[in-house]
Image 1 (cartoon, protein in one colour):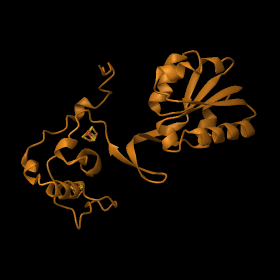
Image 2 (image 1 turned 90 degrees about the horizontal axis):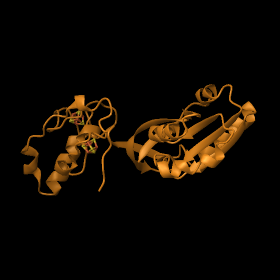
Image 3 (image 1 turned 60 degrees about the vertical axis):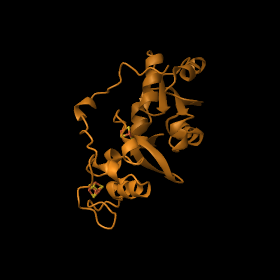
Image 4 (image 1 turned 180 degrees about the vertical axis):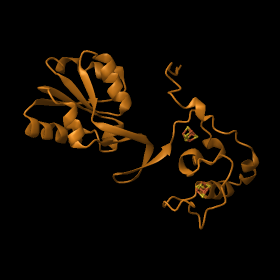
Amino acid sequence: MIVAELKLYDEIKSYLEGCSSVLVAGCGSCTSICHSGGLRETESVASWLRSDTGMKVRSIIIERQCDNEFVAEIEHVLSGVDAVLSLGCGAGVQMIAEMYQGIRVYPGLNTKFVGTTHDRGIFIERCRSCGNCKLGSTAGICPLTRCAKGLQNGPCGGSENGMCETGDGRECAWCLIIERMKAQGRLDELYRFTEPVIWSGQVPGRYNWGIGVK
Ligand code: SF4
Ligand code: SF4
Protein backbone atom coordinates (compact mmCIF):
# COMPACT_ATOMS: atom_id res chain seq x y z
CA MET A 1 0.00 0.00 0.00
CA ILE A 2 0.94 3.66 -0.31
CA VAL A 3 1.62 5.00 3.19
CA ALA A 4 0.91 8.65 3.97
CA GLU A 5 0.54 10.79 7.06
CA LEU A 6 -1.63 13.77 7.86
CA LYS A 7 -0.07 17.20 7.41
CA LEU A 8 0.03 19.56 10.37
CA TYR A 9 -3.26 21.33 10.81
CA ASP A 10 -1.71 24.80 10.46
CA GLU A 11 -0.38 23.92 7.01
CA ILE A 12 -3.78 22.61 5.93
CA LYS A 13 -5.48 25.71 7.26
CA SER A 14 -3.05 28.02 5.48
CA TYR A 15 -3.89 26.43 2.11
CA LEU A 16 -7.56 27.13 2.61
CA GLU A 17 -7.32 30.79 3.59
CA GLY A 18 -9.90 32.83 1.70
CA CYS A 19 -12.11 29.83 0.89
CA SER A 20 -15.68 29.78 2.03
CA SER A 21 -16.67 26.28 0.93
CA VAL A 22 -14.41 23.25 1.06
CA LEU A 23 -14.81 19.57 0.30
CA VAL A 24 -12.62 17.23 2.34
CA ALA A 25 -12.13 14.10 0.25
CA GLY A 26 -10.88 10.92 1.91
CA CYS A 27 -9.78 7.82 0.03
CA GLY A 28 -11.24 4.39 0.66
CA SER A 29 -8.07 2.55 -0.31
CA CYS A 30 -4.45 2.89 0.83
CA THR A 31 -4.82 5.96 3.02
CA SER A 32 -7.79 4.40 4.80
CA ILE A 33 -5.73 1.34 5.60
CA CYS A 34 -2.84 3.41 6.96
CA HIS A 35 -5.24 5.54 9.02
CA SER A 36 -4.46 8.87 7.40
CA GLY A 37 -7.29 9.43 4.93
CA GLY A 38 -10.14 7.10 5.86
CA LEU A 39 -13.61 7.93 7.15
CA ARG A 40 -12.51 8.72 10.70
CA GLU A 41 -9.66 11.02 9.64
CA THR A 42 -11.79 12.72 6.98
CA GLU A 43 -14.54 13.44 9.49
CA SER A 44 -12.01 14.72 12.03
CA VAL A 45 -10.35 17.13 9.59
CA ALA A 46 -13.75 18.36 8.36
CA SER A 47 -14.88 18.88 11.92
CA TRP A 48 -11.68 20.83 12.88
CA LEU A 49 -12.10 23.09 9.89
CA ARG A 50 -15.78 23.66 10.59
CA SER A 51 -15.26 24.62 14.20
CA ASP A 52 -12.07 26.62 13.67
CA THR A 53 -12.70 28.54 10.48
CA GLY A 54 -16.44 28.94 10.05
CA MET A 55 -16.15 27.70 6.47
CA LYS A 56 -18.83 25.53 4.95
CA VAL A 57 -17.17 22.13 4.98
CA ARG A 58 -18.49 18.93 3.49
CA SER A 59 -16.76 15.58 3.36
CA ILE A 60 -16.82 12.54 1.13
CA ILE A 61 -14.95 9.27 0.73
CA ILE A 62 -13.82 8.41 -2.79
CA GLU A 63 -13.34 4.67 -3.13
CA ARG A 64 -10.00 5.14 -4.94
CA GLN A 65 -8.73 8.64 -5.60
CA CYS A 66 -6.17 7.40 -8.13
CA ASP A 67 -8.94 6.01 -10.37
CA ASN A 68 -10.73 8.39 -12.71
CA GLU A 69 -13.95 6.36 -12.65
CA PHE A 70 -14.34 6.84 -8.90
CA VAL A 71 -13.21 10.47 -8.99
CA ALA A 72 -15.86 11.18 -11.65
CA GLU A 73 -18.51 10.24 -9.06
CA ILE A 74 -17.87 13.37 -6.95
CA GLU A 75 -18.84 15.84 -9.68
CA HIS A 76 -22.32 16.31 -8.19
CA VAL A 77 -20.94 17.57 -4.85
CA LEU A 78 -18.51 20.11 -6.32
CA SER A 79 -21.02 22.79 -7.16
CA GLY A 80 -20.12 25.96 -5.19
CA VAL A 81 -16.97 24.39 -3.74
CA ASP A 82 -13.89 26.68 -3.71
CA ALA A 83 -11.35 24.00 -2.90
CA VAL A 84 -10.93 20.28 -2.37
CA LEU A 85 -8.68 19.07 0.42
CA SER A 86 -7.57 15.60 -0.61
CA LEU A 87 -6.73 12.96 1.98
CA GLY A 88 -5.47 10.63 -0.74
CA CYS A 89 -1.86 10.05 -1.76
CA GLY A 90 -0.09 12.35 -4.21
CA ALA A 91 -1.53 10.40 -7.13
CA GLY A 92 -5.03 10.94 -5.81
CA VAL A 93 -4.50 14.69 -5.41
CA GLN A 94 -3.31 14.88 -9.01
CA MET A 95 -6.21 12.82 -10.32
CA ILE A 96 -8.75 15.18 -8.75
CA ALA A 97 -6.82 18.27 -9.88
CA GLU A 98 -6.63 16.97 -13.44
CA MET A 99 -10.32 16.11 -13.65
CA TYR A 100 -11.63 19.34 -12.09
CA GLN A 101 -9.19 21.94 -13.32
CA GLY A 102 -11.34 24.92 -12.35
CA ILE A 103 -11.18 24.01 -8.66
CA ARG A 104 -8.18 24.36 -6.38
CA VAL A 105 -7.05 21.01 -4.97
CA TYR A 106 -4.75 20.80 -1.95
CA PRO A 107 -2.94 17.85 -0.34
CA GLY A 108 -3.91 17.12 3.24
CA LEU A 109 -1.35 14.31 3.52
CA ASN A 110 2.35 13.78 3.01
CA THR A 111 2.87 10.65 0.91
CA LYS A 112 5.72 8.68 2.43
CA PHE A 113 6.38 5.26 0.88
CA VAL A 114 5.20 1.91 -0.44
CA GLY A 115 5.01 -0.36 2.56
CA THR A 116 3.37 -3.06 4.61
CA THR A 117 1.59 -3.22 7.93
CA HIS A 118 4.08 -4.21 10.60
CA ASP A 119 1.77 -3.99 13.58
CA ARG A 120 -1.51 -2.25 14.31
CA GLY A 121 -0.97 1.33 13.10
CA ILE A 122 2.71 0.75 12.31
CA PHE A 123 3.85 0.64 8.70
CA ILE A 124 7.25 -0.04 7.22
CA GLU A 125 8.78 0.76 3.86
CA ARG A 126 9.24 -2.27 1.66
CA CYS A 127 9.59 -1.06 -1.92
CA ARG A 128 11.16 1.96 -3.61
CA SER A 129 9.37 1.38 -6.92
CA CYS A 130 12.69 0.91 -8.70
CA GLY A 131 11.00 -0.41 -11.83
CA ASN A 132 13.20 -3.51 -12.10
CA CYS A 133 12.19 -5.87 -9.32
CA LYS A 134 14.92 -8.26 -8.18
CA LEU A 135 13.06 -9.97 -5.35
CA GLY A 136 13.28 -13.29 -7.23
CA SER A 137 17.01 -13.44 -6.56
CA THR A 138 16.94 -12.23 -2.96
CA ALA A 139 14.34 -14.57 -1.46
CA GLY A 140 11.68 -11.88 -1.39
CA ILE A 141 13.67 -9.34 0.65
CA CYS A 142 14.41 -6.04 -1.08
CA PRO A 143 18.02 -4.93 -0.49
CA LEU A 144 17.40 -1.65 -2.27
CA THR A 145 14.84 -0.70 0.35
CA ARG A 146 16.01 -2.56 3.42
CA CYS A 147 19.82 -2.38 3.23
CA ALA A 148 20.93 1.02 4.55
CA LYS A 149 23.29 1.33 1.58
CA GLY A 150 20.98 -0.24 -0.97
CA LEU A 151 23.68 -2.83 -1.75
CA GLN A 152 22.80 -5.21 -4.56
CA ASN A 153 25.55 -7.81 -4.39
CA GLY A 154 25.97 -8.88 -0.81
CA PRO A 155 26.66 -7.31 2.56
CA CYS A 156 29.09 -4.52 3.37
CA GLY A 157 30.62 -6.60 6.15
CA GLY A 158 29.73 -4.24 8.95
CA SER A 159 26.76 -6.03 10.45
CA GLU A 160 26.87 -7.36 14.00
CA ASN A 161 24.61 -10.08 15.36
CA GLY A 162 22.35 -9.64 12.37
CA MET A 163 21.91 -5.90 12.86
CA CYS A 164 22.92 -3.16 10.42
CA GLU A 165 26.10 -1.26 11.22
CA THR A 166 24.25 2.05 11.00
CA GLY A 167 22.85 1.34 14.46
CA ASP A 168 19.47 2.71 13.51
CA GLY A 169 17.73 -0.41 14.77
CA ARG A 170 17.26 -2.12 11.45
CA GLU A 171 18.17 -5.73 10.80
CA CYS A 172 20.89 -6.25 8.21
CA ALA A 173 19.00 -6.93 4.99
CA TRP A 174 21.77 -9.10 3.65
CA CYS A 175 21.91 -11.25 6.79
CA LEU A 176 18.19 -11.83 6.31
CA ILE A 177 18.64 -12.63 2.62
CA ILE A 178 21.49 -15.04 3.26
CA GLU A 179 19.61 -16.83 6.05
CA ARG A 180 16.50 -17.22 3.92
CA MET A 181 18.44 -18.33 0.83
CA LYS A 182 20.30 -20.83 3.00
CA ALA A 183 17.05 -22.22 4.39
CA GLN A 184 15.80 -22.63 0.82
CA GLY A 185 19.01 -24.33 -0.33
CA ARG A 186 19.76 -21.48 -2.75
CA LEU A 187 23.01 -19.99 -1.43
CA ASP A 188 24.79 -20.67 -4.74
CA GLU A 189 22.42 -18.20 -6.46
CA LEU A 190 24.01 -15.37 -4.49
CA TYR A 191 27.19 -15.71 -6.58
CA ARG A 192 25.29 -14.33 -9.57
CA PHE A 193 26.19 -10.72 -10.22
CA THR A 194 23.37 -8.17 -10.08
CA GLU A 195 23.79 -5.14 -12.29
CA PRO A 196 23.93 -1.85 -10.39
CA VAL A 197 20.75 0.17 -10.14
CA ILE A 198 20.55 2.85 -12.81
CA TRP A 199 19.55 5.73 -10.60
CA SER A 200 19.49 8.19 -13.47
CA GLY A 201 16.41 6.33 -14.71
CA GLN A 202 14.58 7.13 -11.49
CA VAL A 203 14.16 10.87 -11.64
CA PRO A 204 11.90 12.34 -12.88
CA GLY A 205 9.08 9.81 -13.12
CA ARG A 206 9.84 6.91 -15.41
CA TYR A 207 6.32 6.00 -16.39
CA ASN A 208 4.76 9.28 -17.41
CA TRP A 209 3.69 7.59 -20.60
CA GLY A 210 1.93 4.83 -18.65
CA ILE A 211 2.11 1.07 -18.47
CA GLY A 212 -0.43 -0.98 -20.37
CA VAL A 213 -2.11 -4.03 -18.92
CA LYS A 214 -3.57 -6.33 -21.52
S1 SF4 B 1 13.58 -4.56 -6.19
FE1 SF4 B 1 12.80 -3.59 -4.33
S2 SF4 B 1 12.44 -1.46 -4.90
FE2 SF4 B 1 12.61 -2.60 -6.82
S3 SF4 B 1 10.45 -3.13 -7.33
FE3 SF4 B 1 11.33 -4.88 -6.20
S4 SF4 B 1 10.75 -4.51 -4.05
FE4 SF4 B 1 10.50 -2.55 -5.15
S1 SF4 C 1 25.12 -3.89 7.66
FE1 SF4 C 1 23.76 -4.96 6.20
S2 SF4 C 1 21.94 -3.63 5.95
FE2 SF4 C 1 23.54 -2.40 6.91
S3 SF4 C 1 24.55 -1.39 5.22
FE3 SF4 C 1 25.74 -3.26 5.62
S4 SF4 C 1 24.84 -4.82 4.27
FE4 SF4 C 1 23.39 -3.09 4.31
